[in-house]
Image 1: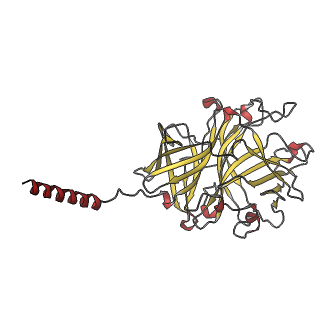
Image 2 (image 1 turned 180 degrees about the vertical axis):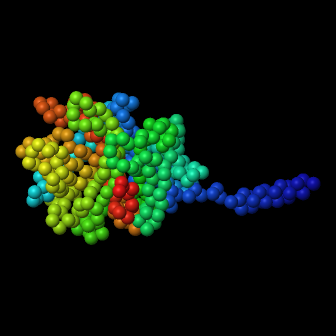
Image 3 (image 1 turned 120 degrees about the vertical axis):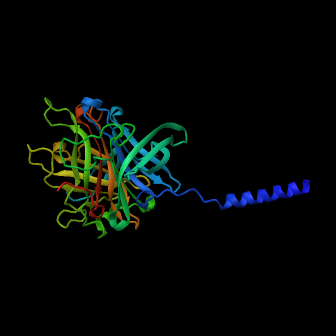
Length: 382
């Protein structure tokens, strides 16, 4: 009897192992738009009357996996921390472009400042939802969920996009700010991102030389939307903090025959003196100075621009420029398609305490944006 029982036990054990090995694997989760690697801008921008200038922006990478998990690593800045501009490189572009230091927001040239781990899935109406459950080190956190609109098939199927519900819309100062819970279960209320299966490493990043000289890129206008917390008007007596929507980029291209961008000597950057776009109507200097540069690793670029009239005859403007950390959008074929980015603009004094934050909250610019090719079909007002 013992031999029979032992034989049966061996048989059952073998059968169980066969059944376990034959069991179907857990069903894979479909990647958003079939894309794993994403560059994403997220932020909280609201009326000053509601958040008292506590806006924040975040820029980073989302990586989705077929097992339904997702991770992000990001750089982030909060208005109340008053992050400052720091030198990134020198733009020696020759010609009419001023030789000046290109600056970015403090921290962007270093390692990511934070990260999350979580899961993703889809709602019944096809929205992508992401729930962050752990921090970058794997420690549990109070779950943070995001609900994204998903667009697929961009760039002939080589890219996809995610947006918050009211990211795109008409330009102006009456942006529809999503109510709590519509886009996220925390304070994030605006976001935009683009995904593909191209590497997120530095090897996938287009160089400034390619943007100017490569015919795939240098004749292409890059455009998008910019959702920004800013002042309602330039009048100090009446202005307050609002949320507006503007356009990014324009009809210009990097290799324009009449007024092209110029490569820097000795630094991985390019510069441009953009005509007739200054922020002052009270003088004869109407040009805007723009720089874009490669910075550190991954898909990172940084943009800085300022109105030449503010330099008051000096070659460079050292104070309230617009610093914009950016990540390149690259499609499945390795083609550059533009950027997503953030602006973290802290107002600084221009007197004896110049370049130090002066606590003038209403004069800040805190926003997120995309600036992409026509192949990505940015939803612009007609």
